[in-house]
Image (spheres, rainbow, N blue to C red):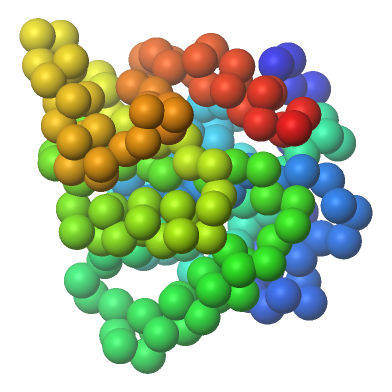
Length: 195
Ligand code: GTP
Ligand code: MG
């Protein structure tokens, strides 16, 4: 997809702030610091529209980016960051529920994982949670550039096995640094957006 327009729309903390124009949405879920914002930036070829940082736990709200007036990327706050208080964790869970329980315009969820490591308990829980709500999931296995070529296939298999992916689920090896997986991601997204 050729991206001609990409703009940050809102940092939504409550349901009332979600956009009301009914454009399709693609959400990004994943551990804190895994590379969700970098994925968005790579897909739209912008260095820093979606804010990235080396400090985990930065994104605390649902960040909406409107692409080509056609759909939204929804950058969901990351999970699994140890230094988050119990109260903040509860707030996060509530925000997830509000969003994932009834967001009708959601077309697919990109579950971003770090290919270097076996998916964590939190990753497995997030995957199961999305499946429970019946959302189509596309697993993006990022930081591919950090995995030696000879290990890529076995690491992908490990991710599939640990998450217990269904045969119909997609998993895309990806790197925000080299752009590998960008084209395949767009192909999948286009198909989901037009559903
Ligand atoms: P939160 O918003 O805190 O949940 O983080 P995030 O998931 O949005 O991660 P972000 O995109 O900010 O990236 C976190 C760190 O990982 C940054 O230092 C990025 O430069 C780095 N990073 C992201 N993608 C890749 C990648 O494909 N390869 C490598 N080597 N590093 C990456
Ligand atoms: Mg982020």
